[in-house]
Image (cartoon, rainbow, N blue to C red; front, side):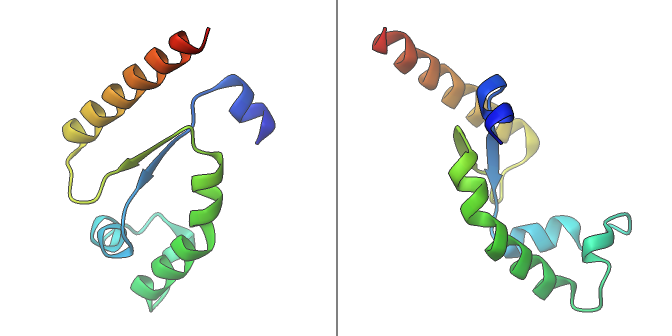
Amino acid sequence: MKIINGNSLVIYLEVSPQEAFKRLRNMEDRPLIKVRERKQKIEDMLKARKHLYRKYADIIINADGFGSEEVVKKILKKIKYKNLNEVNKC
């Protein structure tokens, strides 16, 4: 993770387990969630990973219920804000 964090901007698109399930429920090309209790598996995976996603993210975006265009706008706004803050630190 040091290499990724040192050379890139890590953005975590955070969604609730319900939103993740809604988005992934019909996907058949995701081996980790190709199980009978898909909703529970997604909840368990998010719970186990959330702290790491948050720990390494430079920017966290709440993507729950938002379409891709709205999420992109949120990302660009956060990047602009982050860049302004970094310039002000110099």
